[in-house]
Length: 109
Length: 115
Image (cartoon, rainbow over all chains, first blue to last red; front, top):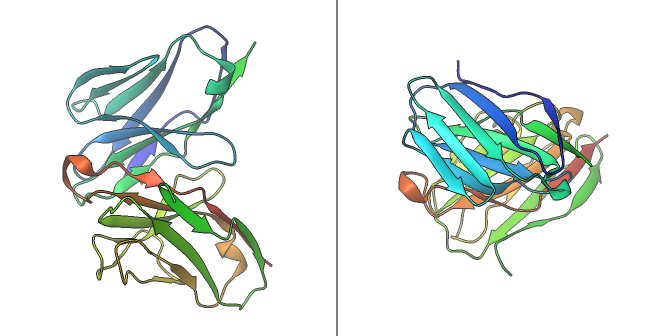
């Protein structure tokens, strides 16, 4: 079966750095997405990786290793507004997005 | 309108009733999707549409139907609601379903409770 694994919850301190990991087993691979979802709101797109390596976008970076079935989202200079759930999703060979259950990130002052 | 709108925002429904959740996008995206989100689970695809006039089944299609009469609208119908359909429903769209324009953008969601 297809599976996306990410930690259920993480806690970090304002101003610090946090890395959220995602491992996947899917039938085929057509890219990996990270979304942010604040409580009670819709998911919003953060990043897309299809090739191995690091993609940097401001305070957020996303890394992909296709051979290891692994990705991480790196958040720097954490702010209180970064408290949210972070969803990892992989597009399989049928171009269907397979979603992880999400990682709830709690930022403490 | 900017982006994707969904209606209603929330609804409490008696079991056995019929309900249609509405979704409209103004981005001229070809592909549209319906997901449900339940606590502790990832988003699960109910139905999708690659382009106007076509629809397909996702991971959890039973008890739901969709239509895509035009590019902008993609309604989801529960023919006879059951309590297990209590969930938050998200509509999403993407420029296409394949290729590098397949980033999905989400509507604000509909919170449905079936009693």
